[in-house]
Length: 374
Image 1 (cartoon, rainbow, N blue to C red):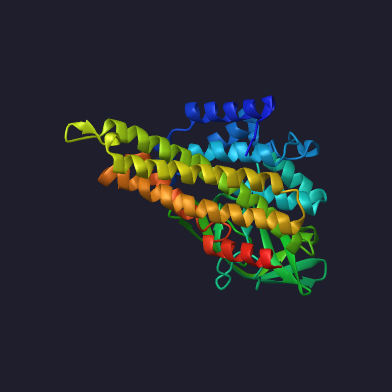
Image 2: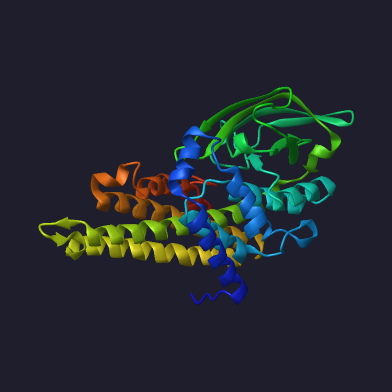
């Protein structure tokens, strides 16, 4: 696939990469995850104010730059290569995508807040019995005068402990609707119970229980949100695929460098043909993942079926590559690969989690097959 960035896109890539190399220290990030706030708010502000990437793909009318899917891909890949835990995909891609499709004053205000680095989004959609299927919505909302009353349970709401706003799916009059909920994990609205935790890849998440949570009239963003959710989640798949590509590039590069330095029987282990073959296999998996990510990025504006097929093909390809590259990277590092001191173990955890984010590899293979038959 011949894919050339414009001069502006290449500048964006270089700017983000250089910023992260200079300002995003992995050790400091892990310390913040384990003993601090779970993230680095100062980095998030810098991404908004100094680099401007939080608004890169948002409309100019809300303070964004008006970029598109390619800009999002470039940013996500750079973030993945630095193992950034700050909630870019949840806030900018998922939150931004849903709010752009919703429209209206509240949505525009929240989009402006995202671009300024002031709004963090948690997307509350998965439920205890939904697996990873976002279309299975059992939570309910009912009208009560000018207000709405929300009931239900949402699970694995990533970024919720950091969020200032929840976007929640619920059944309203027989349709999947989308609501905005003002939120603070330490002081949630009446009737909302929050159980926060850290995920395997060292990110923040929470399970949420809504019991008679009352919402104002403007909380309803979309009465029929199913199509908007589907399109936005395909964009999220493309972004997390790009993030995984950035992580896999780093794993491959670190593994090759380690093999050149590690000696056995008086020679670098990179000279062993069997290990060379394994590293070549890692590179082949990476190249296929890159091609699939480019393809879905270019297909996001295609008709729904074509877009969905490209998203599922990319996610399935990424899932396979993430598993192979992550495991090979750890194995070729030996016991060192699972220590906290080396980056490879942290990348392995993230690549493992990617295989389940926005649908599992098996789910996307099944969806691709169903769309192809249809």
